[in-house]
Length: 139
Image (cartoon, rainbow, N blue to C red):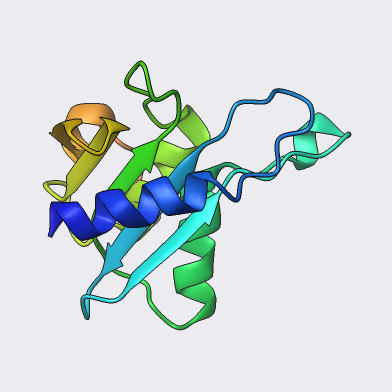
């Protein structure tokens, strides 16, 4: 399973649109039915409009009707391990099948780390927290 995700993330990295930073990132997500979607980072002259590879891959999957991530892989700098940014972690947890899904942090096709969603975003704020809030009675 990891090899396919790693290959898809590395391939997506090559399509990154990074005219400002030059920092290419690729990502791939394995969804509940074993379909893999990938994405790359896409920069914009208005930096706030830039989209990260992880979110591109997830939004690609969701736009095709898939909402449960089984695993995610990400590659940035091929000489170092590049972890997802904070906003990507929050989007990842929104669609994670559970908090134990593997997050594969890739340096290159032979070197990678496997973490869990809980490892990289402990104590995440999720829809469960919103449901719990509705039950709180204010006096």
